[in-house]
Length: 304
Image 1 (cartoon, one colour):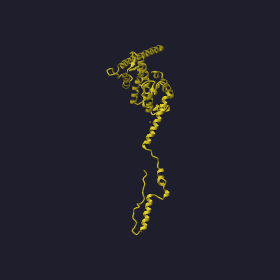
Image 2 (cartoon, one colour; image 1 turned 30 degrees about the horizontal axis):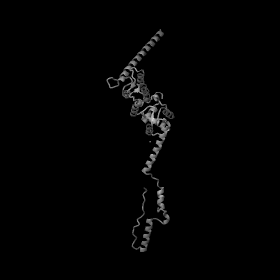
Image 3 (cartoon, one colour; image 1 turned 30 degrees about the vertical axis):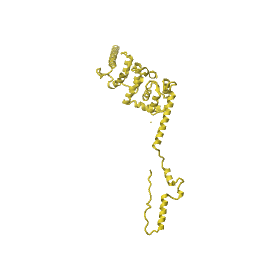
Image 4 (cartoon, one colour; image 1 turned 90 degrees about the vertical axis):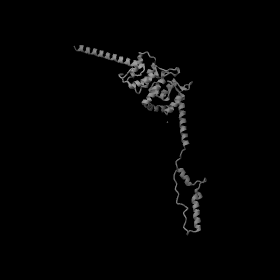
């Protein structure tokens, strides 16, 4: 399981003057009849030569044809739905390219090919960020659901699309609240769920701490990892509480450890670390003084 870490979105119309205006009384009856006939003709349209077979006037047809086509809400929805379906198909094809022959998931071998196509190393921070966005439950494994939902979450359905999203994903991981979420995800990601692990193996925890702090390494990290490597306490695993509290530790405790207090509710492992680190620094300082003193004495002898 740990090999991947340890190695590896209407025109308005206007009418003319009213036809109902009365003529003067001196007009003849025949004149009124002619006017009435003309009014009837203007209301029904021009001569039959201007009427199409379907009864539509040529002028109306010209107006309608000049208007831009409009789309109903259903047409737009259908277009969006079609685009989403096409994207889902591409995601499915991408998943099948790397999935295991027996299990419906991308396993270690497929993950290596996937990373090679992305031009990233399986042990890179980018891969951890991608696993975080995919909400992968297990290291070196993407289920079909995780892969599909993850690709939709980052709005990518191809290798090029995923690669193009890396810069924005890395910037997102720099945000304090997002990094906290990524940091806590990393602990769960490192556990072997099939074995029912509740604590990270010490070696895996060290590797994951190095990885998750790639972009914002705290000053005390190297000393902390040195302490865990030397392992004076003989610990075998790192609990979730210790993992989560270490992020708080890096944010509130200064590099010189002078503001650390054992009276506060820190894990006991932190007490041991601070004591061990202060003692190490003291010995280091004494060694420097002895070396400096020997050098000064040698210089004095050479001068005499």
